[in-house]
Image (cartoon, one colour):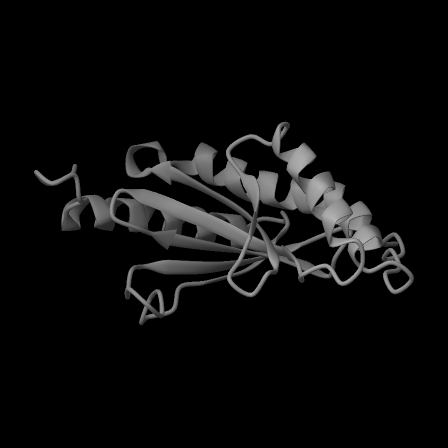
Length: 166
């Protein structure tokens, strides 16, 4: 599945791409949280690698967006959790770092523009429907669980919880 240098070959990349494309089509046809799945034809803006944009319905936010990007040997996934905190950044970071200990397959991280992301990666040979369900489900569950407190800390006085649906 990988070449001599450990870099995935074209066949492995095509296999993983097919798994993700079929999973996304199936999920879009269902009544689950996935409301959009796009794969830009030019791929990742830096590397050109295959990349998907998944948009999910959320209880705490209008949407949660997850990016899936194929790298040399892994599927990298990330979602922007919140902008850089404006109030109590130390308290906000401490809260999220403490949550990292209980997360499975993901971790909170600070992005290049100081926004906070949830990130993770899995090797190509683990990418299947169950793993994609876990990635998307965890992204949604962690955002819904930790977003209100993190926003209340990081944007004190400005953040208001979204009213319950229905």
